[in-house]
Structure formats: structure tokens, C-alpha cells
Amino acid sequence: MKNLIYNIGITLYSFAIRILFPFSSKPRKMTKGHWVVYDLLRQQINPNAQYIWFHAASLGEFEQGRPLIEKIRLLHPEYKILLTFFSPSGYEVRKHYRGADVVCYLPMDKPRNVRRFLALTNPKMVFFIKYEFWKNYLDELHKRRIPVYSVSSIFRRDQIFFKWYGGTYRNVLKDFDYLFVQNEASKRFLSKLGVNNVSVVGDTRFDRVLEIKDQVKELPLVEKFKGNHFTLVCGSSWAPDEDIFIEYFNTHPEMKLIIAPHVIHESHLIEIINKLKRPYVFYKRATMDNVANADCLIINCFGLLSSIYRYGDVAYIGGGFGEGIHNTLEAAVYDIPVLFGPDHDRFKEASDLIEQGGAYCIHQAKEFDDLMDKFQSDSDFLKETGQKSGGYVKSQAGATDLILSKINL
Image (tube, rainbow, N blue to C red):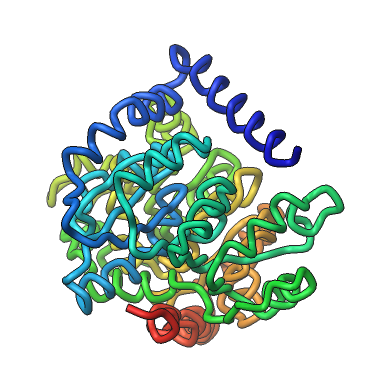
């Protein structure tokens, strides 16, 4: 009966996506990707090869799994890599990722789709990243005795597994051969459900941001823009974030500002421009001549933010006033203080950074203003906060190697 309810829910979800097909680009891309996934697999899967399958919901989860993918590829070239995504925001960005041999969407979790997908791919081993718990896939993998692991997962009391009505999902956890979780609290919650094949290894994202730092891009335009000025880098910002930091920037001519908004649609860029009272330039229109004369640099393209943080004296991470904060670690790894809004409770690393003294939570503009004044006037405070921020990231590295030490390849 519970399986029937779950399968009905998946069917209704699939139907809803098809209804939205004409009206939204995300459902449209997903549906088109599902239409061709089996043809793509028939064309690209080598039936004589052995595949290790990684599944990530979206781009963030992919970045968590990426260190593991690339380490396995380096140490075990005898295996090929299959990478699947649920969301277009992951697939569309990484469909040409060279670290995988096959990249595609994951077909909807219906029993027929599951059997068809596994018949074509026949993976030797499977890794589901963080919050991926597709019941039919996991049940079938368990039935076929294909080892399956949960990586960088984290469990909280408010999740469905721990509710009185969460029996179907609780059973799913027992399909995993092993769960590599981020913290001790997750291990305790799972233990109460009788799930003990668990190790606390931390979060592979720490390994990833350290890799990114080692491979950082030189950005001469950004370096020219910064010069010798105190610079605030605001990453993945939304309108409520911009209301706070742009107001401060407008009244502090001694500093410079780099904004990498989460949404770079023209309407949002116009909103930002209308709030600015000092000279600005868009990155895609910047030259070595005009960028030095601007006080604000607006990044109107994707793919640069993780490299841009290195030019900041302080970083502000957007999304904390409603959307949920974005990646704090990409900034913290450069030994700079990190600021963000109050919606960060779901992000362990944000709470840890605050506890370590490397980050501060902003609830209102005055808190932001006071901190920015102190960062600019007290160089020791700025340096010490940055060192605590970067030190926390370095202290959490190593999850990838811990995972590899516990699986049998």
C-alpha cells in the first residue's frame, strides 16, 4: 500500500511537470531530457565496460560529489563514470563535464523506468549525493545486490524519516550499503532507526573548495578594478541583500564593491543600477581603461565567482533573507571574513563558521554597517576573522579520502 502511494505521488509529479512544459523553461528542459535519455544511454554506454554511477540532484550536489568522482577516475581508470542529474540547473551546466563518460538526466522513479535504466547501465557501484533518496531505484539496487552509498548526507529531526508517517522512507535508508554523513547528530538520528552502517566523514565540499583555490583563475580586470582599495565581494545576491550592502557602499567612497548577483536577467541588473549612486561597470563591458575608474563592478556572467572571492577583503553571501544562503565555503577558503543573512539554519558550515568566529549573521542594515566599519578601521580584527574563516575550511578537509578508504574498489 505504501509503495502504491509513493508511485502515485511520482506519477502525479511527472504529470505536473508535463502540464508546466509550455509555460516554464525548467520543466521544458527536464521533459526534453527525459525523452531522449534511453536513446542517449544506448548510444553512449559501452556494454563491455564497468560503470560507477554518481547521482546528484543539482549543481550544488554535483560539486560535493566531484572530488570523489575525480579521485576515483584518477586512481581507478579501469572504471567509467556515469553521472545523472535530476534538475536542469545541474545537467545544463555540466552536461559536457569531462570527468564523466556519460552524463544524462535520471528518469523518473517509476518501477518500469528503474528496470529499464539499470538494464542499460548495469552499474558496478552507485553513489547518491546528499539528499537523494529515490525509493524505487534504491529498492531495485538493493535487490540486485549492487553496492550503493550515500555521500555527504545530513539528517535532522524535522525530516520525513523521523516522522510518524515516514515509514516508507525509513525503510529506504536500509537499502544503502553505507552512509557517509557530515556530523555526529546525523549518526545518532540514524542509530535510533536501527541504521548503523554509518560513518561520520564530514563534507566533501571542503575538499572541493580547496581544489578550486589551487586551480584559481587569474582575472586581470578584477585585479585592476580592486587596485589598493578595500573591496567587498557580494556573491549570489538577491534584492534584499542588495538593499543592505549597496546603501552602505553608496556612502563610503573609500571602498569598492563587486556584485555577482544570483540572477543576471536584465530586469534584476536594472534594479541594481537604480540603487547605485557611484560609478559602475559591467564585467562583460569592462576594459583595462574603464574598470579602474569604476567603483562598482557588476559580474553579468557565470563561472567566475569562486575565483573573484580571492580579490575581496570581506565577502557577503546572498540568499539569507528568504532564499537560503548560497555557498559560504567558496569565499571562506580565501581567509576572508564572511557575512550573510539569517536564513542559514539548514547549513551546518554557516553555523560552524559563526561559532569559529570567521563569519557573522546579519539581521538588519545597522549590524552590517557596524561590522563593515570595524573591518575597515581595525586591521587586526579583519585579519583574525579571516584567518578563523579559512582555518575552519582547512580543518574540515579529508572526507574524500575517508570515503575511499571504506569502499571496496
